[in-house]
Length: 427
Ligand code: PEP
Ligand code: MG
Image (cartoon, rainbow, N blue to C red):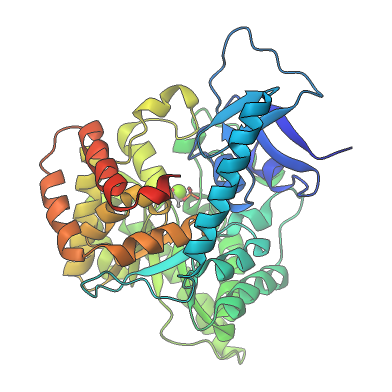
C-alpha cells in the first residue's frame, strides 16, 4: 500500500505512537484538540496532523482521494487543483529555506540581547525522539514523558528496561540535563490494560502521581531505574500532577529509601540530584511557596494548568475556543509560581505546549521563567525569539499585559509584537 493520510474519528495517543513512519504521511481526526496527547505525539513524530478538524457539511471523504494536509494551518484540501498544488509547492520551498536559516542557530546558546540566559530544552515521548532533540540545538531534555514506555503492552516495563531507556537519554544529551518525569498515565493516556479504571471523570481521577502513590511498587521500580541512570549523565527527576505538598513528601520519602538501598548495594548514586514538582494543578500553583521548600525546581505543565483552571477538557474540540493560554487567570498563576520559586531560590521552567509557541516566548520570558522545554521541531524558532529580544522589554510588556482584561486582547498584543519583530516565523 502506498503511503497515505489517515482519516479517523479518533486516535488514542498509544495508537498514534504505533503509526508506521513509512506508511503514514499524516492524519486527521474529528475528535481531540491541539493539546490532546494525540496532537503532542504527532508533533514529536514530526507527522502533519489536524486533530479535532471542524466537520463541514456536504463534504464526503473517501479512500483513494488525493488531499493536501496543512498541519500548520489546520487546513485539508481535498482533490486539490493544479494552482493549489503549485501554491503549496512554493510554501514548502519557503518553509525549507526558513528551517535552513534557523538551523544556523543550532550551536548558539539561548540568551537575550541583554544577557539573560534561558535554558531551552526539548520534550520527548520515546527514546526514538532523543536524536530529534539533539539535532534541534536544544540543551538537553526538559521533559521525558516516561509513560510511553508503558504503552501498547500487557505487562509492565521492568527496572532494567526502564534503566536502559533513561540512561540512553542521559548519555545522549550529556553534559546537558535530562528531566525524567515519573509515570503520568490516566486522563487521556489510558494506555495500559493493567490500569483500566472506568472512571466517570478520568482527568479528575486516579492519574499520574496518584496511581504511583497507590501502587508504591510501581514507583519504586521506576525511581530505582531513574536513580541508577543518574550515574550515566545529568539526570533530574520530577513528579507530575502534584496537587499539594504532601504528595511531594510521600514521593520523596520513597525516593530517598530507594536511593539508600541502591547505595547500600554499592551503586554510586550522586547526592545532589535535583528533584522537581510539576505545577499543573491550580492548588499546587497557589501553594507553590510551600511546595518550593521541598524541591529543587518547578516545571509548569501549562496543558493541564489551563485545563484545570478554566475547567475545560484539554482534548474537547468543542471547547477549544475557551482553551486560552493567555487567560488573565493563567498569567496570574504563572506569575505567582515564578515569584514563589524565586523567593525560595529555586528555578522554574515551562514544559507544556505554551513553551512551544514562539508568540508566547516573550510573555514567558517577561514573567521570569528560567527554562523552556519545547517540542524539538519548535526549538529553533523559540531560540530565534529569545536571541532577538531583551529581557527588559519583555518584562515591560508583561507588566502592561498583566493589567489587560481579556485573553483575546493579550493574544492580539503578543501576535502584533511577533508579527512586527519576526514576520518570517509565521510563514
Ligand atoms: C502539561 O500538562 O503541560 C504537561 C507538560 O504534561 P502532559 O502534557 O504530559 O500532561
Ligand atoms: Mg500534564
